[in-house]
Length: 225
Image (cartoon, rainbow, N blue to C red; front, side, top):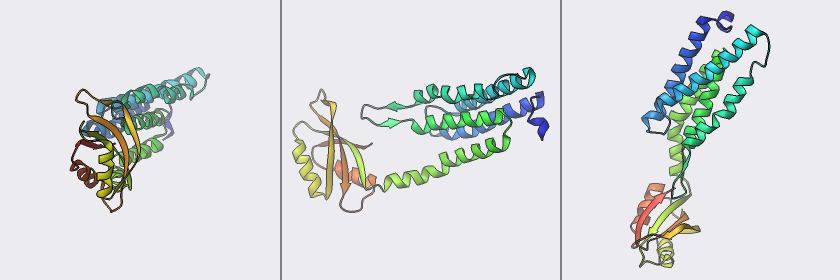
């Protein structure tokens, strides 16, 4: 076992193939859900981190000089630029891409573990990342669906004052708070746009609450954030 932890042609092949496999498994899940970073991105990130650590270990072993983890430390901080590129803030102040960015960062960490020959940690870590991105997605969806308070983006018609909208909410048993007017509150059609926190007095899922709001006269568009 110790022989595949040292830098040899065989160990390098094993590490790179393992990095491609684990990165591909994680990236496949993201790609199937049409996220910004998919199969190829995750494979490249994991394999790149692996190659960095192989190179670092090679320099340390052959030249008997330097820090065996210095190059890996640069990967940990440097991968941030790629993760930041997947995070976007929509015009409705909705943040998307955080999970993809976190997945890229942790996949790079898996690549570093493979690159230095810590196979057990890399495999366990890769499996756990895949479980978090797939199986726990259902739990995350359930928790979001059953939140007591949600933030909703609303667009009202120009002939429907916001005070009337608040009164309609109350009549439906819904409490509104923390209204945030958008920078361009009125668009070219004089529609009023804002974000509001809503809480139903009766038990309603997020989808049911949005549907109930959409039925209010004067509401042109309602979307959960």
